[in-house]
Image (cartoon, rainbow, N blue to C red; front, side, top):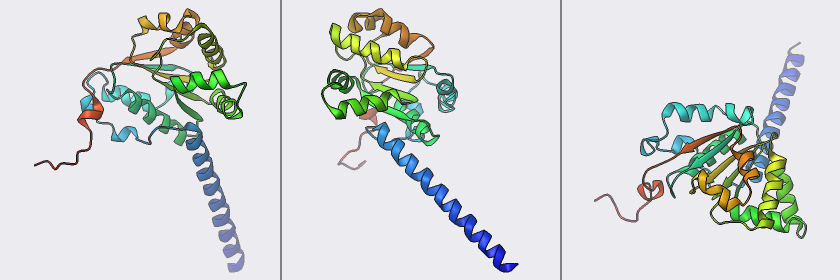
Length: 216
């Protein structure tokens, strides 16, 4: 009887180890696919420096109800006030909860879209983006797109519409998007079922930069 108990315990530990290893490998794959520029969590974000976002609002965002419901987030504000930090932190939360996430800058996304029929790398990247539960697009509307680029971007947004959530990060106000996008249909897809968050304040990076000098 002791031998059977020992055998069952050994099998339980072995199965538990295999399940843990699979979960760890799955997490590693999702983190690799996400391609975050840095792995900073929301716990590291100093909310005292961002007065336009309350502790309660950040907590609600971290619960990811908007992702479960297929909502988009639009993070607007001047450069370096923490928009990318918050978006990446939410993306990391999603990855650790089993969601597939893709992070990409607008400039890189346009290049991927324009070369998807030419290079295997771009095609593979685009497939992963479309397959994601959450797509984070940084520096949206940094530069105006021509008609061809706008059409490719619209096709992507149309594919994501209703099946994936998007976090769009932009220094431009939503009123400027129509002119830069060149198509109001794209704007409609992004704005529909979205929460727009306007961030204000001084540069988060400058305030929290590391220095080679001491505090003396």
